Image (cartoon, rainbow, N blue to C red; front, side, top):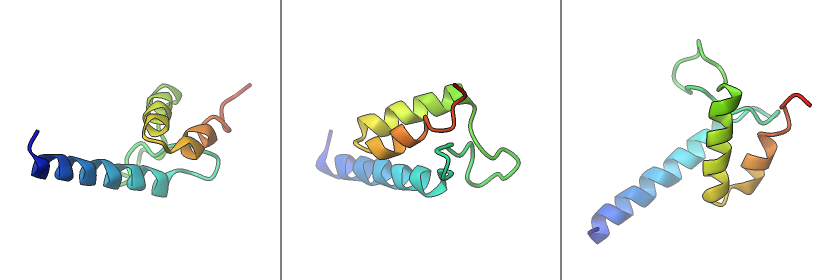
Length: 72
C-alpha cells in the first residue's frame, strides 16, 4: 500500500475511533448513528462488535465501559 494511502487510512481510523468515543454514553452504550437521532444506541450484538474493534484499536477503556450496562 502506498505511503499516502496508509496515512489516509490511519486518519480515517483515528477519526472514526474519536467519533465513537465522543458519542459513547456514560453508561458505556455505543451510538447507533451519531447523525440520525431516531436510533440512539446500538443493539447489544452490534455494541459487542464495536467493543471488540475498540479493544483491538487500543481503546480498552471504551471497550470495558461498554459492558457496564449489560444485564446480569
